[in-house]
Length: 201
Length: 201
Image 1 (cartoon, each protein chain N blue to C red):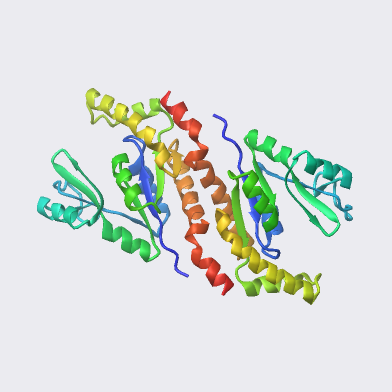
Image 2 (cartoon, each protein chain N blue to C red; image 1 turned 180 degrees about the horizontal axis):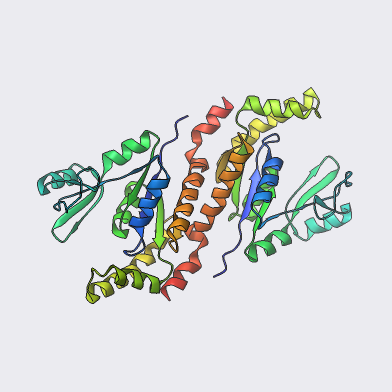
């Protein structure tokens, strides 16, 4: 009685803390597999192929698009970013859960390709706190920060498309909620259709 | 931002362990309120009015049916059993969660009256184990046991109407799963519609 793994899509506005929450989650839930993105941008210092990203050429990436090998993809400035389909599908079929950290536009593409996914919208505790977090990074100009906040508002409008909303007030709280969501989703009747047959035979 | 409480309906075949699981759950989750049934049967030794049941007369019970004051009711042999609607609705509106332990026929009536409820089907680990559990009670004749097993099969057929199926292999496991379901349900986007408005205002 092998149950398929879950595809957990962790999304939300920039500054919601997706990266931190996913990292903590992966440390606590040992059998969760992280979906590594593929990109055409150059590796930064310390980044490893197959760990942070799969680094690839523009030609190879465009070939992947053509062959429908990506669950979603986007071109940001001059660089492509995408989610390899095979890894996600094979891992899930093997019964393992996959976590995918992705922006709201990426998630939108996955809704269509993967309606059975578990879509979690991570929300910073307040708009003020989101401001603070983006400011604190110190890496952005005032102009970019304002654009990000405007974008965040538009992204929050898309909440309805998600299954769950998790307030990231404290990383530990958010992680515990996502852990509960994983357990609950595995108990969903529509993920346990085999169970009834096994039981009644 | 007051979120409504959940109506948790714990159902499943006789012998699945509904009573034991609910009792353990109520001990662990302090703010969970138990929905006390109303009945026309006479109190047994040790049973307290308002704790085990609300004991009432046939006339009063039939008045409650007539006035639509019951979420569900049934007549078993000569006795009425039912779930008072007011308690459930008021408790939920106050933001507290209510747990309702009920047989499959009762749950069926609640699907219609309360589609927003969280319907959990408790399943014994196997049909063999269900047999053992009913036998071990020692209170039933062979004839009744066989009727119960046949009934259990029919009840398991109704699994599709539920949201979750929880295997009661160990009480502790079942309780942990239900605790996770409670947390996950509170993160559901459709239970947090206020959040978006609060956030964007």
